[in-house]
Image: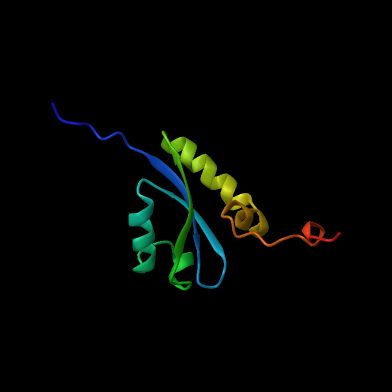
Length: 97
């Protein structure tokens, strides 16, 4: 009996060389990031190379991953940066005593 590979789907974000964040979905985030960096990804990323994978989230169904991708695309840059762990501190978060 063969081991059937259960498909996994991912919503992911790439940080582009100009600081923008691109969101997408794939079944293999590392392969997809490499494709983007070869200029074979989305038109948006082709002029913003190199890109780096900064966030990925796994889902059991393609539908769930596509829904999450759509939600990521609707986020502001600040929200995306916070999600990737590279958010800037807001002025009211300073250590004033």
